[in-house]
Image 1 (cartoon, helix red, strand yellow):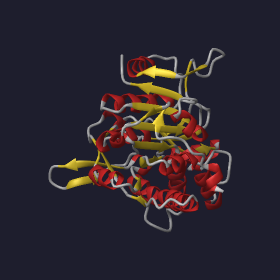
Image 2 (image 1 turned 120 degrees about the vertical axis):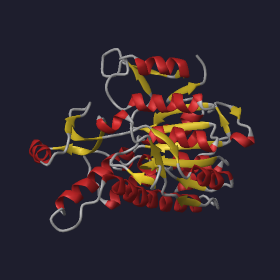
Image 3 (image 1 turned 180 degrees about the horizontal axis):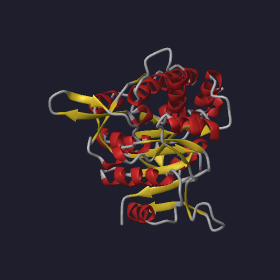
Image 4 (image 1 turned 45 degrees about the vertical axis):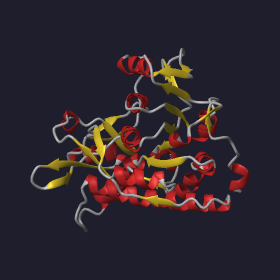
Amino acid sequence: GWRARASRFQISIEGKRVSPGRRTVVVAIGGNALSPSGESASVTNQFRHTRESLVSIVNLAREGWKIAIVHGNGPQVGDELLRNGVARNEVEQLPLGVLVAATAGWIGYKIQQSLENALSETGSDRRVVTLITQSRVDRNDPAMSKPTKFIGRGLSESDAAELRRDGVLIAEDPRGNLRRLVPSPVPVEVVESDMVRELVHRGDIVIAAGGGGIPVYRDPVLGLEGVDAVVDKDRAAAILGRDIGASVLLILTDVDGVYEDWGTDRARRIDELSSGQAQTLVAGKSLGAGSMRPKLEAAVHFLDSGGELAIIAALEDGPAALAGKAGTRIRPGS
């Protein structure tokens, strides 16, 4: 049960107590953690993985941390695009931004229900809410015309060829899988961050910026308008952490930390980094290709905006990473 799985630990970071006003953490969970590749994306499987992903958050909740959760949606929004394509002769196609909103809703529901059940089992009365949020971007961001974000699952050669004929941009990801590429502009703000901050600071656990948030821009006449893109969830988590005054950004992923010389025989995990050292890694080539660069960029942005600690760790290592025993920890400094 959850009582046995959620081990007790003090409200501290690496043995140092955190001031009561700074016990706020933004936890970012990758969409692949909820729907791993090579496995059926059934509702049952996704609920199972969701429950497995929440042990760290249950620990944090029981020990009094104020929590916001941001989740990815790469596999899930790709599946929604596939459903869009299959049904295109029967129903109106939905734009990508609307599909981001849809996945934020139903992934949020899975996290919310699973977390409510887990907290109830441990005797906690913490409340959980999913808030559909918008991430404002710059309409003129160069990324809008240079798609770089992989979404969806790996495609067969025949499926990729068919999508290319329909004008869909397909490329090979760092792991050799053929996948869709879509624009991913940098978020400027989470539009509803004031509401998230109010809910989090009164003790509610808030699931926000799901899938990075629904990308929007502000039109001088019409107000907020959606764009056909996705927002990186780690960058959205950093922005949200800045805006709600979080002390810790905890990025939980499918690797156990940041590696120098990734993909080579010289690969080694880095336990500690300053934000200056992280910036040097981002600017260089030793990270290799993959998704670690935006995670480090998000960590640096969070620390430069007043955060105290950013951690990148494996999903199952959350509590150990907070205690300084796992993952890569990044702190402010040159």
